[in-house]
Image (cartoon, rainbow, N blue to C red; front, side):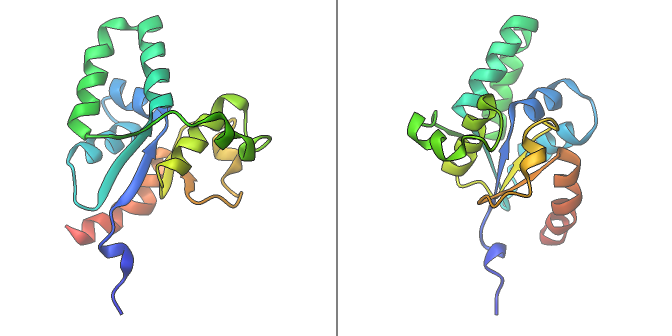
Length: 155
């Protein structure tokens, strides 16, 4: 019996901190994740939320405005599918699960039908990975360790 995952693209939702880290690192798991997504492999779909895009832009404007063109170029090169801002009512079921600032990230990953949420947020998001969510939550290194060997077999 064929494996249904072989025909379906893995929907990889990147949190803001992974995008920022990947943009400004020459190596490391966040950078490798961005580099792999930029290859537009037929097994992957890059996803992030409008909430995350706004967060990255806000941080860059405050700390490094000259990097905004680099970020916008990254969005185009990778071809991120950007999930619209979640409505307030979609946040209610997530109350108490994580910090208030991270609820829109979870809601966006849910709305974007993510298979995996890749985040470096050890304080909040990585702590809730045991909860029954529709996607897994992994650090960038865990994401690469879990999926890279499988992609290599498919190429």
